[in-house]
Length: 471
Image (cartoon, rainbow, N blue to C red; front, side, top):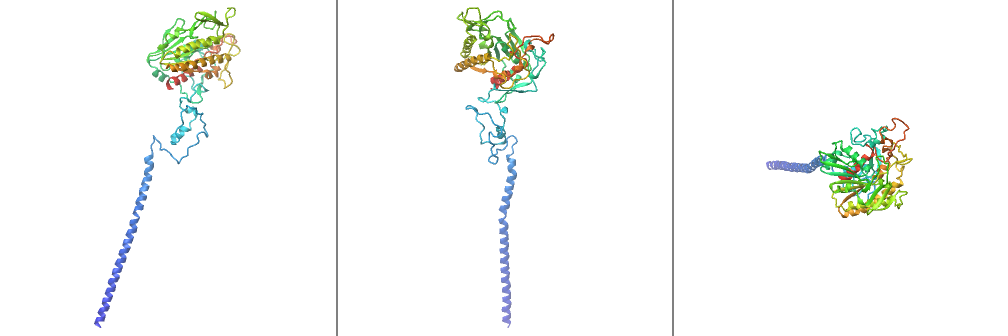
């Protein structure tokens, strides 16, 4: 009996031990399972934190105020000629920016209008454009510049309208920076310029001097006996500008007063260059050479010291050759001299300028009463101007090829289109001082050939600076 009780007690004890072991085992298993699951979440938490950190850092690392981050496929490239058409590119025009760079800066560059583009070689035609309003007006006035000749000093002479002063030349294919007098003088330090030709060259040199006088006043250092050729010096820059009177470029005996009244025909030596300019030619670094209208005058032509014909010489018993005969010969001779000269500077050949006489010409009551620029196509180039220009362009083309072979830097200034639409820019009756002061109906000499100063001719200097310095 006692044995049976002990066996039962032992059995109960073993059951309790067994149950305790099972419970311990189950508790350990549960604890291990719980630890494993909690451990398995750690990589995801760390990865998420790392990704969150990287996302928060990415914009900071790519922000650069001076250089925006490139945008790739997220922003589509706009069509090149959708809303703002660009001028057609010629074969030698610069290529557009690569499509691989579509940053904000490059996109804005693609969308620039033609007028805002920087001038580019092979693309920019400075001589084709329009006159657009220019509210700020000219760089100088007749009060600020004392170098304006009386015949072109329109405001002093009593011209009452001033609208012609508030236009500027704007090429269609590119931007033309305004003339920078300070920079021009800096670049031209220790240099010498010459403007060689007739009274239009004198008109131009005064325009250039007036603009430069906004920086420093020029000092006149030379003039000939008739004050037709002059020289000026800018002391701070050791820069010299000369105006050399040579209306034919070849040797000529002229019998004419300042009002254009002749007492005899011009005696013209077609095979002898005028030494007024050729003797000084190699001393200049830059030159603007021109001629033209004087060949329309009555003249006797000489070659090899022999009379060979004339133009407008009734009763002389000479062969009428016409002015084209003389113009071609004289211009070819002068251009050949330039093209073979081995000159190391820059030489411009300027075409003759159009006039705007109406109801006659200089000598028979012609006038010019317009006060605003003409619209495109409103004025046609006169036949005589067309003939002169045709000869000029033909001779320049021949000379430029020869000049290139000889290392001579010869360029063309063709201001025909620029000035054709400015009939309002001439002195007209205000060539004289207050011409109608005594009689409002007075018949006076009109000048529809030269240009008021300040006036349209000032914008020649913008073009010349762009070609000579910026270009």
